[in-house]
Length: 506
Image (cartoon, rainbow, N blue to C red; front, side, top):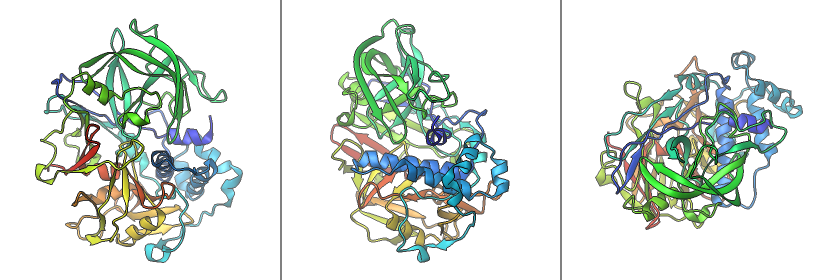
């Protein structure tokens, strides 16, 4: 297995979904965050953080239609820097074969083990390499916490969202075939295709360390009597990972809403990001617009609308936060066809046009505030992506943001990125950061900016920042993931090509 693939795949997370009866006008179902299986050794938090940053850089390149791409060597160099900066006692605590390989690579020796701090004011003017970030050790605790299940939704046709470890990805359970079987699909607003692994699926690269596509659920003529293979080829390259196969038709059901002979893809070949046994999903469901479908098929949301099973081609997201779980359960959910009025404050709802010329979900930012102070930025645009954990912005913007976060520092030699206090030192009644959309300010909780503790034994010390640098999307383009989305109710509508945001109900 390629090292970069192995490291990027090591912390892939997913969500499962339990379907519930739904009205014909809309569907809601829980999206579950599912983490690595318990038999997978944890990686140090700094490595995990860099994996997320590298993956976000790749997604930003893809979603923004960038003409240039960050070389694999640069992303691997980011990981090597993090590995080389680990103190010896941390390396021992997080023994992982892939970490050993990283440290033995020829280029690893050029990275210093010295850890130095550069505060934001001192760092202004320096150029950050795309994908740089910060972190160290709290992922161990997060990984071992496993999955936090969702409460049973009270809103009709709603599926809850389980949380995996420290808030990282979301999946739904979908029924496919005859007899009907459940498939765990990663819900992704940054793509438009639905696919599952095919019977007989093999790894994309013959030199990978396994002969098949892992312990997952697969689809084909042996398992489904209504399966039909059109033999039409398709393939897709994600921010990290790729799959290829053929277009097929079969019966599919979302939350009990049945689409007969729905057209989608099966993957005959999968890259190493999808094949390991510990990857908890069987495929992916894209929730972006049909214009970006690599299969040339109709995305599931639009297909449900055309079939009259939902009133509007709407997807609404309530992304949960582990810290808000009550009695061991989250309140996250995903709704198709409507907005759940129990989840948002109606008087805060704003609707803005989607400005993506490609087919993703993108909006203009009217402004940005940090610590209650206006940054006087009115030319930024944000791609909103449920499949991205962090918030990625151009280096100059990231530097300016951290300059206004008390206690933030940049560590160019050690952690290779930004660090913030795990416990905010500023006024707790003042939002750490706000994005102004449609004339309304939407706050980001300081807990979401503090991504992971550098030292799990000191959860009130320093944390890696949930805001990382990357300039591959073009000037003023941000990739906004769960760091922000956990703080709002977001809804996308294909019909009028709009995105709605509202503040969450307390």
